[in-house]
Length: 332
Image 1 (cartoon, rainbow, N blue to C red):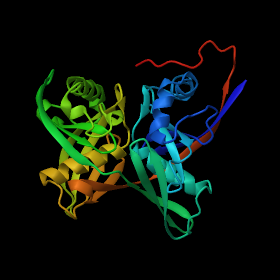
Image 2: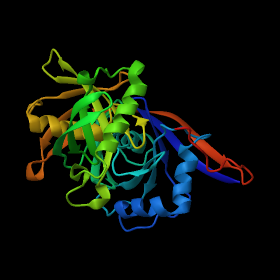
Image 3: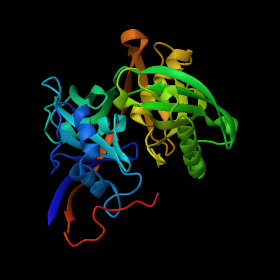
């Protein structure tokens, strides 16, 4: 028998399965190098499929392997994974990791105040700023990597023409307002939203807008953010609702952390989000992130996205050597 221990969280309804001690070798001097290795290594990729695919997971499962950091400047590293492979960034996962690091005692935190948990991810170094009150974790800020707009495109889809903005927020995201194509970001439209998200991603495959300007390992449109405007709040905050369709048809239940970073970069560039204004970003299931942007290098912004993560359980997964369904399957 093989046994794999995990700690599961959710951030805004989106799962995040943490593997504190992956029982596989993850080679590489940096987290970015380990991501490339894991995607090609049968043991590492097999562990991803085992924990993500059915019968232990599902098509929308998400998680991460804890690794060593790139250097002493971070507490640990993480390889993010989903049903189709290993991703370059994950904001909702970073929020979950911050809460887990403090709740597990891995990082010492004051009972009232905040502590920074620095984490190396494939797209760079991020921070989970964990806020506590009376010894309880009450909120986590995801301080993203430098984020910036890349390009705009007008695409012809099965639902008509649609304007798409492409930005980087740790991963490359396409963004489109669905009001013009007869959709809303509501659960009743989730199948149509998945189909449109996939269609936009396919249309941008090979487009120069999908290439990272420096690191080819970060190239490719990771997700499509489909949004609708909800105006402004009574406090003057910009209010939008979105759903992110990432990988191959996965639907993010949260407002999407790295997607929100990309969205903030777009909104700051267009002037829709003021320099000191907050973006209130809702998800398709009603969960919420808030985001602000501080100036970054070379005209970029550093998004700071606030949310909360909660534990859902701890698991000891068993792998029977005679089980013909190992490492699992997906039906999407």
